[in-house]
Image (cartoon, rainbow, N blue to C red; front, side, top):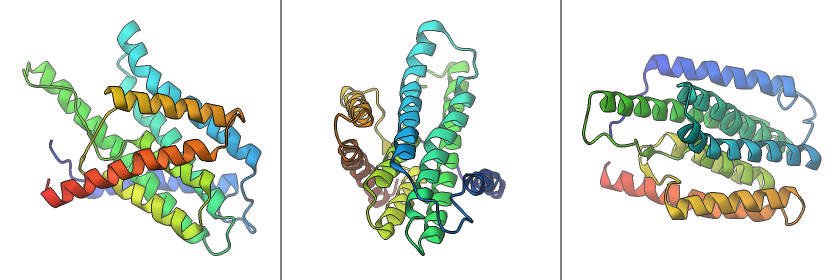
Length: 247
């Protein structure tokens, strides 16, 4: 799989997105506000519900496009929408949660910016790989298959960050885990997609647990623990193996 380098111009483009995120953080009152407003349970549930609906849409858009056809805008729309739902929203919730602890707003802000920037890079890289695959198909390349995921997918990263927000461990752990997720998003290593029976089953189960928790049937901690235990170790092991193998 080709590795796409990040240029100086790319860094400037990503900084554009990070500045937009910081502007949203100021507007929402989770940064440059004393004292930090905190995160009410009702607000958290509302954000998680919207995130869950967004994740469900992300799962369904592909099959619907294949069944009823596509306008050709799907790839671009998917990149923009994923940046908002799986990048900006989890990062904002992290700031709101960790900002409740005195002295941790700065580190949380750095981790949130790193996460947003990594999400943008990861989505752009995947879009470029998909475009290269389409060009190979247009040239009639016989071995041109669908591009595999490289690095942690943005919905997976968003799930891990939201799980940290819900579980609310000590702020040092929250910041460290989100920083790790940012690294895993941009690292080069193969990540299994959801087309396998196991992957699709896990995503479906996680969605069911998430909506059950939002409905108050079970604790919000249940899908959060499942998300962290089922997603983060896979990425860490695969990234470590690729690093050791030199791939």
